Image (cartoon, rainbow, N blue to C red; front, side, top):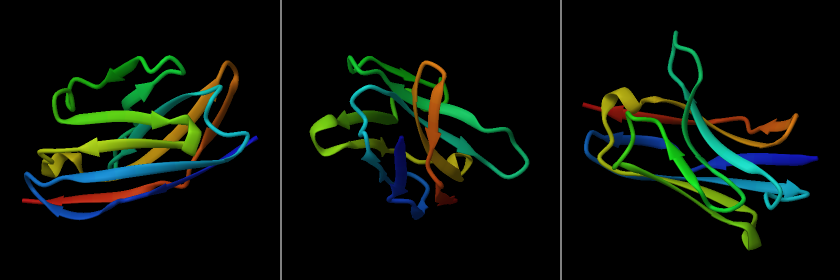
Length: 115
């Protein structure tokens, strides 16, 4: 069982930066691939970035070159560094940990980018 808590969201101007954090309690992150997802109003939830247990990363085309995902298993933390933010990045951002059929979601953190 893993409990996930996101933090670091907020209001930022276009071109600004934010760093999101996802903290895991319980069994921790080590066995899990972790992904950041986002959901804007009226749109489906989409994968933004993911990182495997071997630190292999994957990004949505819309954030490549601007966002960076990283993990620190010793601290049970996963981060999403977001640079050059755009108004279209506005969404609730969720952290998800999964291993095979098991997956866990956090409660989300709001990111709002003003133009």
